Length: 171
Image (tube, rainbow, N blue to C red):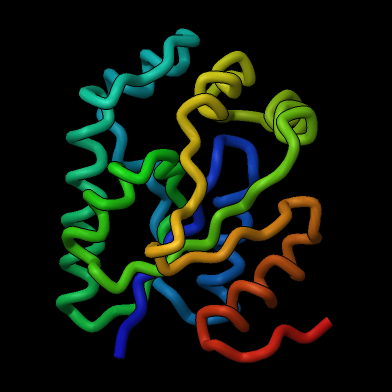
């Protein structure tokens, strides 16, 4: 049985780090949602302008199609994707109805600090506030878990694997 997993949260929360570690530790096929963006969207964000729902729709559809194709092929995946709104996650679940979500959550100050120190990423820290405004936490009917991003990446991965396999996490 394959599992489709998404690491979600605002830019700078550690989605890529945790996703790549899950690829390595749990043997999940990894994809970075940023690589599915249209060039116009990247240019818009790079210029400090937030994307609209209309801007995001083709991106979300491309992600959903990838997840659906991988699921149909029997592959277990992990996708690093902001998926800030419930409606975005619903688009993804349309192709991966068993989607499991790990939400990395933390303070705006810590995330801003991380964003200001990272290199070679198109998302400026100035857009963090718009992302935090758009963020809709996981709802009770979504198969998900929220983890504190102040935990070390290895700990986040241990908790994620334990939750995905429904096993107790080791300390």
